[in-house]
Length: 446
Image (tube, rainbow, N blue to C red):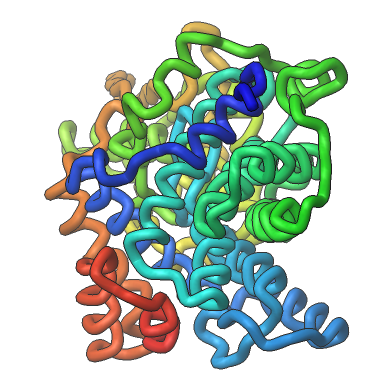
């Protein structure tokens, strides 16, 4: 029987099935291991957040088989529930990675479902790593076709793109054939949603969990012949027509040619990624000019429209709101210097010294600014003006530097939770993840 004509949805499904991971360079897998270490660290740090506790209570009400581990809680839930809870926990602190091509945060939508399925089905580390890569590539391909308009329209791409990426990754891990994968993408695509309006609430990390859970559900249903549209992306009334975007052949042609994970940006400030360039620019002025807070008359921050649509809290009343407030993030960085988890508590946000400096900070859109770009202009009390421009996505560290930074971040996040010995054992296990025969051995460590 001849192959069906491949529209975009089928082309992506065919890629999921036929991609030859033996052709992927070892350095690409090293990038995945760095991403996984970062993801696991932020998940352990977020495991006791209030929304995680509420999701645990919710799943306790539902009951179900004990199939996969809730990380850091020594309990098992259904594979679907584990994907939901671990996904939400990993995005709860907004300390996870970002990929501009994905229009959001890919790892929090991919690793939770894959880890739950791998534990349940006893999959090996090599399959786990390659399935992540394939899901990431599918997600970035769809996001690149959806374009910035998708995000600007109000969609939270971490969720919308994450549903489809997770379905692709889970389909690959479970060994689905082409037709089943087409259906899995359709099942995930019709559930694909998530609105930016909920930023600063529990629903933003909930989106990551929902995307992970949807990928697991879509792959499992499709494996049993559950049908859906075969052109969920490009068809009339499909995702691109309803939610912005169009098929772009040049982007589709990159399948199998590049992976994009080299551009994955991990976070070194525990706030929305759109606050990072303003933080870096302001700190660079202070350091270069030897300024202190008492020298500041005013600070002008210029960002892109996209940045301000996400990090739009001009005032912050809670730690969570502080993560989406450029004025708070800049003021905190200049006053305290500590931009880690400890900076985003209700008490820290209410600090009068921080409030005083925030009142001197103005944030406006500059039409020429792109995505993560930011210019900060600081006027001193003596009338001197200093400025700096930063785009943190153009300053992503090389792999060797990333390894050092993420190991330090992982240690900082995990040692308080599980102690030094277990943290080191986990780092060692992740460093040789491709050699693990059964992912149960890794979840057992957690």
